[in-house]
Image 1 (tube, helix red, strand yellow):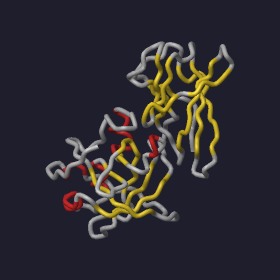
Image 2: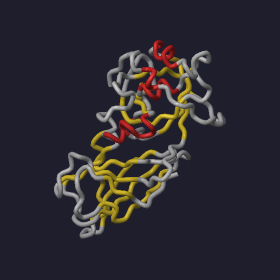
Image 3: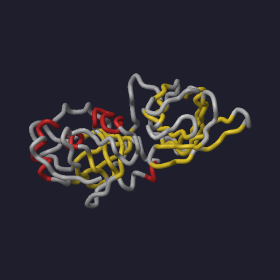
Image 4: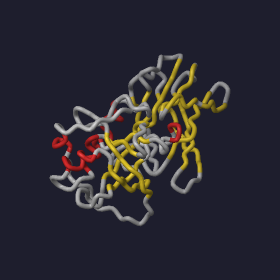
Length: 250
């Protein structure tokens, strides 16, 4: 992901401050910058493969990361990022969702313009943006999506019925998806999907009929477990459509 420092649109990026958060956990020190965007939002072409969801999720408070990307396992993770310039920045910082891969000048986060400006105190966003790169501290936090279950989107590059690629959306909690498998009814066995890239999982010649899948989750305690979604993708699935589930990660 490229990034640029632009000033003209920065005032549009100033947002209301986030509510106060308890600082019970230790933070990791790093640096953050931002990337250029004409509308202050995220990018639909991020390396996680989220598409338009990656542009607008979390009110467009999103980020590209490098070492936190973890070959795509880090996609969808949430972090609190606070800048270390007290004269310019609030104590609360900004909560961001990982939607892309990006490397900067010794940075862990390349933020959307909206997320970067949201770290600033009132009327200080222009000055913060002028810095370009700032020292920050960050910590992993649970993702929260009020009113949403976990959703399974059929990727636009899928071709019914021969090739299926899916993306998991609204991944709540402090979870990482380690594996995805589909149930093959005629063989009575689970078939593993391949992590194509980022948060995109795919399989040629997927099972016929409504699709039941399970996915391996690693939570904040570091213990992996399997969660199952029965018949979550209909037999006549269509590329580009997101299907709701009854699954709630926490």
